[in-house]
Image (cartoon, rainbow, N blue to C red; front, side, top):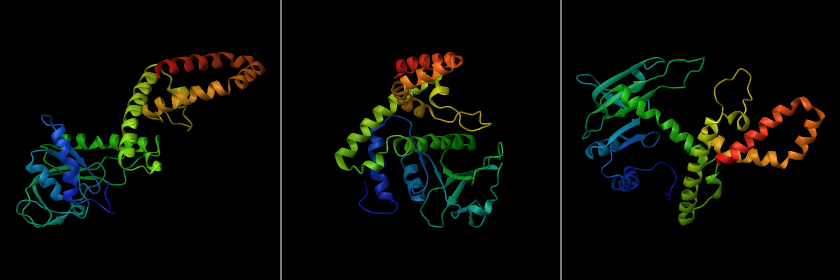
Length: 259
């Protein structure tokens, strides 16, 4: 918890990362950074520690290729469907920094969907595919953040600090793992159609994550138990719906076995 508003500086970022380096000593480490974790100073420090990194850069960042003048990233012409790899570039006009590789990647328009912007990635990885594959892992990280906050456990709403916050995060880590494992098991059984039914016409891709299926599976079972008398009364009015009701009861039993 920082005792201030605004972004963190290099010293605070080092303080955050150093304990992890000690904890994972002997493992190959890759740091992925976005927003405030994009600084050239951080990249230079990670480079000195021989740690792999992929840091997304702002479009206004200056770079310089060999024997060329400085230019902003936004002038490189990164459009949908375009990607490139620039080795050994100098980032920022400040002196005293190492040279890095730069990756430009903008996903092409797919099924009518177009990303709002491409990626400029500063990295010490040796190829475009490696850098892009690594940075795509951030989508899973962002999804996990949402699961811990508004999409699941509402951690921010607790306004907890200190030891209470640490205790809550540990409990969430355990609960999150259990929910994901339960969700995976439910998907393998084909039960997601009961917990997370498609609600949009002409939508065939899955709507909810494995975590969501695992978390809300138990709520669906609870709702079925709460409304069971009403459901039975409705089935008696329309006996033709009995097979569907029996499938739901079977699904409820299987979901309980997955929790």
